[in-house]
Length: 333
Image 1 (cartoon, rainbow, N blue to C red):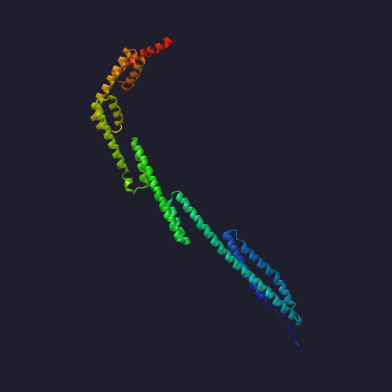
Image 2 (cartoon, rainbow, N blue to C red; image 1 turned 60 degrees about the vertical axis):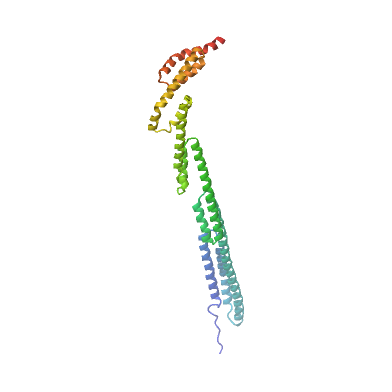
């Protein structure tokens, strides 16, 4: 009895296309994920899209060929087509596998490239922080090179460089500050010297020599004051009126009210002697008709001793002296 053979309900290779479709969709999904993360990586999306196109094009053809495979001749032809399609699908799966492996290799290459860039960026940042004298920030970045990249030797070299630069900067700032303080003290600019000391104290509060700077500046000020007092007494003893007055002017900013009171009587005597000397010079210049000399001495008396009787007498004669001082010039014309 002859029985009719029925065609298979579904080709035996259908499951291969289902697997290929799932694989293509998986690659496409990974591609969208990477695009969302990096914003510019289209490789996986392109690979997944190509795989879906290949499956969509070949699957209907395979189904059509499978449907024509009924009957003895068709079955043989169908089995041959089946094998050919299976080989093509295997090739497609192998190609997708290679794409996946290449993508993984690309990811590793990117990771290595980004790692090198990050390390180079850290190196530049350390040098920039050193240039800005941001020592703590530079130290933290050096620690990051060791912790994140494992370059212990390089991190230690950076730390040594940072410590060296910090010490050099400290020595330079300290020396410049001390030179400025010495310059101000020599010029008797004590407030400027104290400001420089306070600046150094703000930068190096734990340095013993820096902490003692205000005391040293005050000690130098007191020594200079004692020298001025001694010089003044010496000038008074040798009747150097002009020298005594000049030193007394310098002493004015150093003396306390009590100290000034102790020198007051001697200072009055010096100024009286100076005034008497100027008065004699004025009288002699007038007697000898040296009108310009008389005007110069008279101006000094009025300027330095404005409230004295001699100054009042000189003021009364100044107009006459100025008139006589111009007479020779008028006669010459």
